[in-house]
Image 1 (cartoon, rainbow, N blue to C red):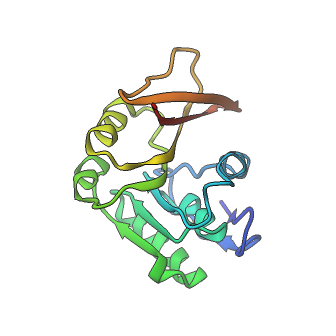
Image 2 (tube, rainbow, N blue to C red; image 1 turned 120 degrees about the vertical axis):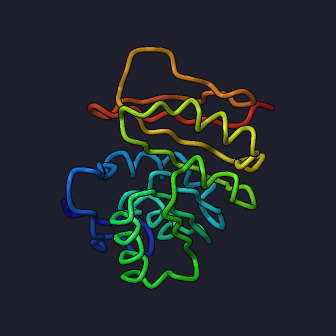
Image 3 (tube, rainbow, N blue to C red; image 1 turned 135 degrees about the vertical axis):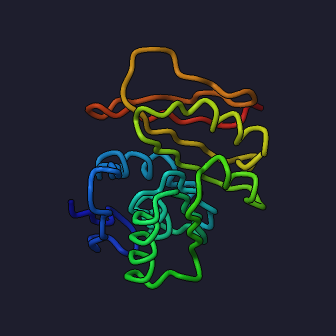
Length: 182
């Protein structure tokens, strides 16, 4: 599957995608929606891409003005692909790739992020990860948190200390976004 950066400095640039069926890249429609929502916060932001796959979300963030992105994916092939894409765009100084299970990686992260994007395998329950993010205070006070999951009509999990701002459906995907409660 070919991926392109949708907007910003690297708009139109092709990215590599990991081979096989272990990775489900976020569609360009969902990526565009995420960055339309967070366009006022992306300049100078620190971006965390969990279950990063090809790294398209974090690289899109850098393309649109984020100053740093951390990519976490336990799959070594996905991490290798992310590193190739980082080299392709020549943004090595703006990126960190961790090849480790997400729940193991979270406590190792030092400072909060302005935007966090979570796109786990659709069968994975995100509630535990959301609660861990809350416990570790990894979202900055004015930050925004996105979760992409398979569309379901059930009520979304709202982690303690957060409020669900909105949710939208894109085909079989559902995009939820949260902010810290005031």
